[in-house]
Image (cartoon, rainbow, N blue to C red; front, side, top):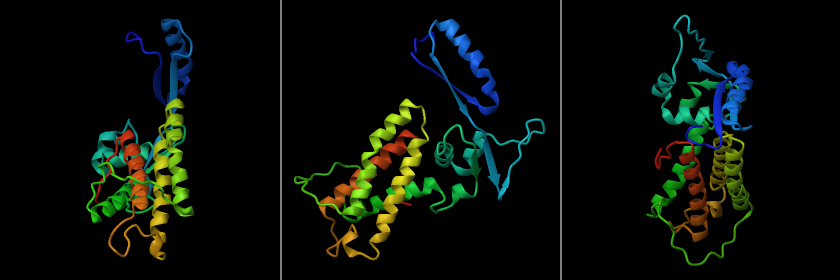
Length: 234
């Protein structure tokens, strides 16, 4: 309040929800304005290790800190998995699953999407970070590409709602859905040569290049927002 912020956000654990009314009243009394403080209640996190819930007790000294969690699975997995659910829903943090290289690990699945696109760009000696130099954009996309492009069109709205409703979980959920759409499209290329990104001449068309660039930009943008790396090789 001394620094003249218009809005204050306080994050409370589920067991502290009873404090909301009195904290809000104090802020209202001190600031002289209503609705200045927003209290977000975050449900508890259950840690699953070796297939069993890890029971913690502060009295007994049995507990795992966030620092312990990061040293065990890394900051990227900790951030992404923690943000991958709404704050008002309990989270089961399974140590084994966050290390898996499968669809069951949302972090891996999104990172692998970006790595796959990067591999195509490397194949044609184009830097994935650089801007594309294309003169004509008279592209013709099929229903499979259009399905992904429609998903891409939802990205600005996802950011807007996440910001306005203070619901950051919408971003990793969206990225996982986009990555799933992309991996499904990639698999179609195994049976249909026309859907492969690299053609028989070992080249890529401009329309497919732009298509991949758009997806990679959104993945990179979203992962940057949640503070998670996107490796070009995996």
